[in-house]
Length: 71
Image 1 (cartoon, rainbow, N blue to C red):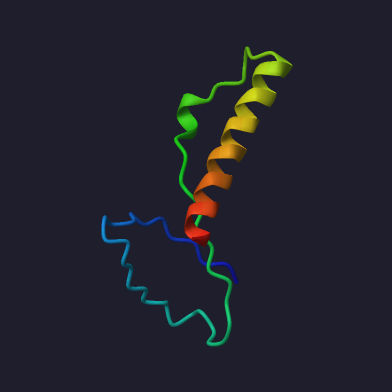
Image 2: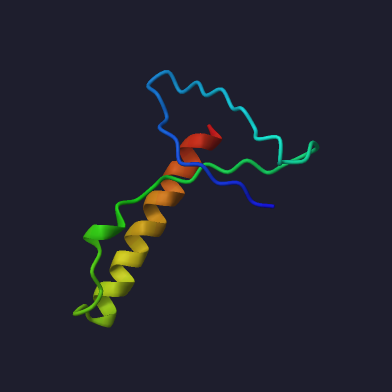
């Protein structure tokens, strides 16, 4: 079972989670993944280099966010 919910991280970075009853008890993996605005990326007329560059930018943003969370 995978449970996904989009939330807003407040300035104090404190979150209280209430898990639905359908989720079994026990260990889980909790992942924080920044939501990106996908409607601004249009690859319909993009060259291969443009797509690769955009992909690199997305990966770098996610990597920076995960490194910040690890601190």
